[in-house]
Length: 442
Ligand code: HEM
Image (tube, rainbow, N blue to C red; front, side, top):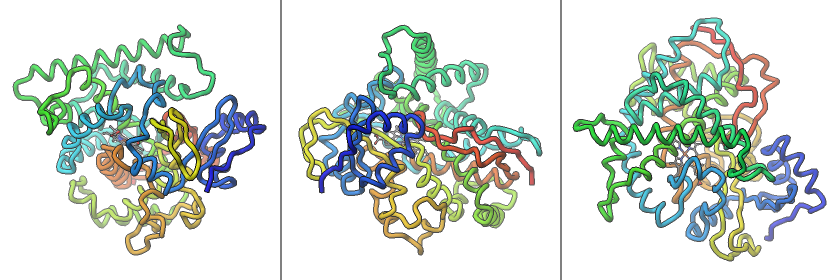
């Protein structure tokens, strides 16, 4: 099988379609051309990989010849050499040093901070109040990761942190646009991005220095990372490396989860029977109790809802790999240095892999109703696959279950103007209008 090439003459039309609706354009093209294709888009030729065997080759079997390389250079000034941007040998050292800090055994401690943060946010909501769901979820997810990492809230720094975060997010979401000026050109946006990055780096550096001075540090993710040692060499992380990792965990670990929870609220609002069954499950397992860590695995229907939400709207809907060598992919020559786009959004909605691929049906994830595709690892990869698989996947699933269950205990978010909802892509796949909703208490 060779890679179909979408005609070069389409480049301008493709560029327009991509700018208007990138996920829709790529999915539509894949459904016509096949799940591995090349398309001219403006001055670029994109190579898209969304077929399970090809994905397994790129992400796992040939992982040594595929890496991040220069494909992620646009965000390096912000995120440095953290795990999600690095390649071996640095990546390998960092992954084996950091892996124990994300072990499932830390789950109960994470759930305790998740439920405290969620309770504080939800108790501030008045019945009948209108809000923007994505903002609520971003605040909860930001506070969850800050609490889990630093055992504290941002306190007086919250506003400055949010401003800096919005600034870097605005830059990151446009950084992949073809024809974008390089960062050294002093445009107002670039200057604001650099100021925001300096602020975040300094702040985190300061927290690390303070933490190193403490004789009895709190039991949190930062302490685990400060104390982490490479099991092979016994080396600890340097301060600059630790700062990069903390920045990456902060960024990789909150917008993604916030988007997942926002999409779940949207999908549940459109499927009342699914929501009612989830509310009944929460009542049966929890009643009015605050969730304990051991309750969460019992919320199996909610778990299926979360998995199905991640299938339809994977927050990491696209990520890149660069070829470190000349090699073959599905019978086609790949040049050294070539970038391919891995697009879970396409794989998760591909008709030959999933029955009724555009339909929200959490029951496809119930154990006794497994589809062919659900058993097939490379057909479902919201957290990636192979050696780079998301290190925070357990954290994210615990957080989504805790927040959504507690929301169901308190009431409902009634989505306003659902017909306006569109998937938008920035650094992640999010609800375009933020999902305005009315909170109605139980
Ligand atoms: C719904 C939430 C999340 C989604 C959809 C998600 C998705 C992903 C994906 C697809 C990758 C692989 C990228 C690649 O192969 O290049 C990844 C890697 C990563 N994620 Fe997540 N993630 C989520 C939550 C989190 C959380 C909560 C954390 C930390 C607390 C986290 C930290 C990371 C890190 C550090 C990596 C790099 C792993 C490596 O390269 O070894 N993520 N994530």
